[in-house]
Length: 358
Image 1: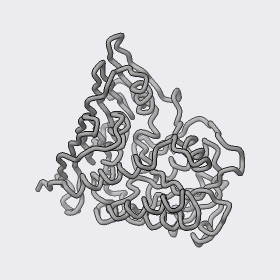
Image 2 (image 1 turned 180 degrees about the horizontal axis):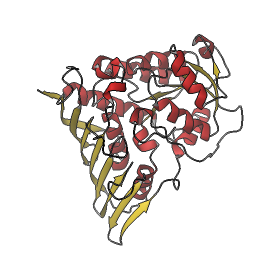
Image 3 (image 1 turned 30 degrees about the horizontal axis):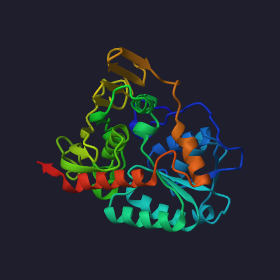
């Protein structure tokens, strides 16, 4: 289900790269409110997971999910999933306000949890999740898809690790999205349900910054939000930006918005600009406008060369296999739990501190 026009239902598909055999890692899906659940399940299945069950109170959503994953079994009560001891992990893309409660129940029933972003919309939820993970030893993964499911972003991280641009000193991120307002549910416009624009799609940006900069923490220096256009939804935020500085001195500015024009061939012209002491990288994630209508373009400039990479189908999505093995082996190779939680905390902090532009 790769829908380049519709970000809510954009679900990348990659090559099968199984890290476990049949039956070794069984998963279920609870909560189909956001189309990211398709990308989450795609990634896990490609890494060898067996998708066993699905639950959602909306039969239309369940029917669409079963059309995509015909092997899955439907249940009319989510407790069937929680009480099945053979299920290792529950994947969830419910309305954001409900994700913490589903994760809490999953861990209490001995299951790892994989949430769409934002996994949390309140700081207290993150604190409780931290305690649960410590008490149970289970994983609480978060689907920060704009890095984890984008081959050009993955490759950028590999180039940085190889020292191709020296020490990263600044990152600039842009995360424009197409609103498709007429097709959105009511909760989409209410920050009490989705957490606000910086908590929601801003979390992608903060996650990438910490990863690319090799940082463990950061401070939110300034943030702001606005509703410039969607005045019929007065609480909705269609624009947000923020500035952060990392614990290693790297700086960050990002902008997120719901203003992708209809003429663009994809749901958003997501980009990242990474400046190092020995070069720089530009990532054009989903399109190279008016040039290539394909995804995953990366531009590298350093002391040796200037180069353009076309990366679709060439890098893969290593997070999912690594995450499965982390769940089974109690390791942290895919993403540290601290990183996943700290990104969520910083995103909520940026949201809470944001100046509202009228």
